[in-house]
Image (cartoon, rainbow, N blue to C red):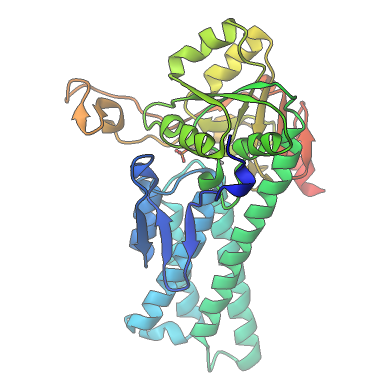
Length: 368
Ligand code: MRU
């Protein structure tokens, strides 16, 4: 069995200063194709098409995308007023607005864009108070934004490490874990959320067995989770989504561990479609259901999950399979990408701050 420590951890992207080198996750597991993204259009397309995906990874990629685009505008000279603070800030905010519009559900993207906008605003205010706006160093401004994107990336890596440590405490030696979608290294800027906890349990010497749901319609579980775990030498059995109930009924699952895209104050959790079904089954079979996510996935402004916007994706994701139609081409389709699991069905939510048990009150936690 391979030791993860000796294996290169897969990465969603590498920041190269003038471009973002991004692994096209839609091509996994057969092809590892790296894209050289240089502007807003490329990064926004990659997020929309799930070339980069997973709540934390989307946020970090978007932060780098904003840096690439403001530099491109500055260098192309098309925005000749970008050497003035207010037009520069307006352009930057237009870029982050476009990035916010790529995918609605994962809140990490919005937190990252808020943070980039805030830092851009502070930089401009500072420049204006220094020299009354007569001279504005737009390159210095872009450099400041690059530092912020790199800080977001670095912090995400640290968050993964911390929540992975806490999450692994919930995994006993010998545990059989069911997981859904992909929550590993390439879904984040670090080691992963739920899969990060699983990696940590494995690294600490616990003998574990993972059941990975295939995760229809885009197969993140089969194409990515099974691939990541297999590479790390962690025993994994791939099952179709519809097998989960019977695997639980057969007593083969000790716990369920998943990630999240947005968590409301009361613990209601949006995650990949199919997660809520697992939670209902878990309650029926008396199996603990755990969510692992950084506090950057919390949305304390939402009291409950009913406020979360659920992304609806292209019907062809359901009508087609590997390029060919697997259903009548004209059939009507409903394709929500996420569902919302009631907090009351979640045994614990693990963040980098610790293991939180119900009743959840994340608005209160985030005040402290
Ligand atoms: O549509 P995706 O592939 O971006 O959905 C990803 C998920 O639902 C993950 O479970 C979630 O983002 C947590 S990942 C660290």
